[in-house]
Image (cartoon, rainbow, N blue to C red):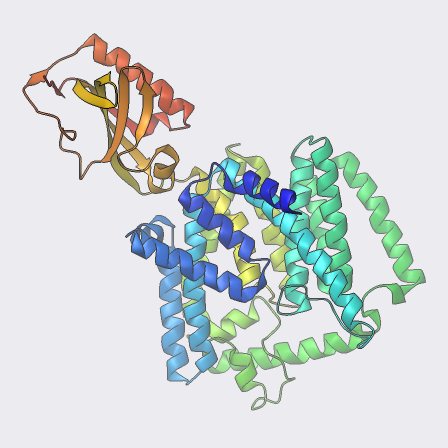
Length: 495
């Protein structure tokens, strides 16, 4: 077990930047109770504030300010109606939205794939816990439903639904060899967890969403086999419906849903503009004679009831922008695979939202937001200008003397990638007589420590050749070409 842990940390923790480590902790926390998720999100916000980067995170995510305004309006409305739960929800939403913006800001192609593998790994742990949970509690309660490390079984089933679609994305995207067997195993174990959660809606969503993803990836041969599997499930449902979760309760549950929806519509008519804050349904169902429930069980009705038309107006631009960018990823053939994953998860969320709103929860929302944040891979991020001072040195024993500048590079990089190069004042390139030192533009004034400025020289072709070496090294470190500006004429010479 110890060796497995070391191997796991080496895969996910090694060769990652500080921001990527924070994102790894956040995504991992989604599978370790809602308290771990909120603690991780708060830690990220505190860390960004301590390093004076919180403003960059908020400004860097498109329409993040709209989301925070939405939270502010929701908090004020909740105060007006003395809705204490609504106030807490507004604050929690603000924390979650900032964490989602952070994920969008730090996302890269390789890191996105690493996070999907992390979700697959941790979902296995959740499935094992669900099995153990049922072995302990099922003898005492025949109607017990496994929730694993989530608040209730429906939230766990929604997370399982998303992880299965992620694993299907990895399988459909290309040939994986033995790794493909691993993803098949992930899907199988999560299906066991889904069966133990006893969630009917998620099963129906997966039956519809998986063929949609197959069609997007043009996997028509696999789609035929899936059609045969779906037909076999239909035959089994007709012959032995009792093997499927709570089929005998479908009629009763739909009657309850319709009663809830009618009550929600009546509540929307009373406060159409701003609603009454989060969890409004639980406060109004008794007065309106509706069925008792914590929320409206519909992805359209519940937000309208809670936040009104004005609130939804602040919320929609964020998601519309993400879908537009995902469509651009598809139409311009930038990254069709990830676009297909975004479309499928969005489709599954909408279908699931017809009868439930399990997405309205920190763990499930951030799991969806992590996938949606893949559009951030191709966005221009807020940048900080860094200067690379290229210096020649002489070494004598343990002493190093700066002999003179041979070039100066002004490097404009997104904040999320600065640490991928090197933090301030560390060596970037080291050769026998050649160093490159990284410093911020604010702290770099053309001088290095212990250097005496004695004049300016133009190194001409030598500087150009040197800058070519710099470019080659930066390309090796995956630094985009358009983020570099080279200056070769104003060089300081030292004695």
